[in-house]
Length: 167
Image 1 (tube, helix red, strand yellow):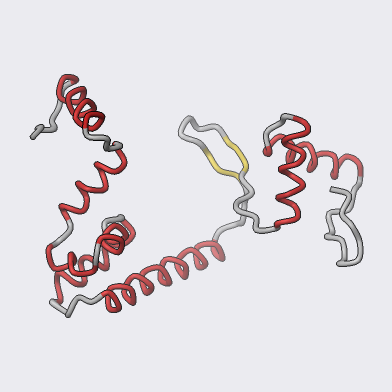
Image 2 (cartoon, helix red, strand yellow; image 1 turned 90 degrees about the vertical axis):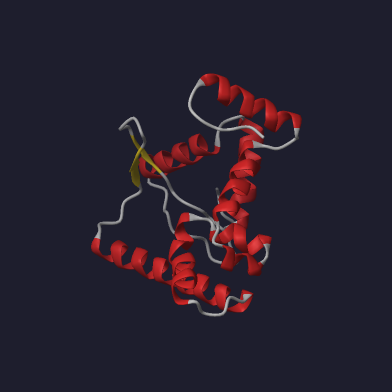
């Protein structure tokens, strides 16, 4: 058994131990978190337990360890769903209060923009084709397309079902 502590030697030994046993650092961290999970919550199985060790699920862990309620997968899943719903409602309330912006700041204080996830399959296919054809990053292609739309006076409206998009 290896004791993890401060110092470069221990870190190196830890890395060697992981490599010898075919364990990634990520998997090792998950296992360590699982060991710290209160015993009462082990009844739900490993997959759900892995979800419970996330910081977001702290209220669920606290609830079951404090109340002594019967721990079942259904009960834990219901509490997890409640926490997710409450987080979503909090985000929506904050979004209503704040001005919507695409701008974010990285750890170095540099401002960048982010468009978020897109589930538009047609646009994703087109973007993938453009990445392959041009060798440019998706962000670069999108940035150039946006600037071209503004500078060229191209309409941003989405084509109707019968029309094909120029993008």
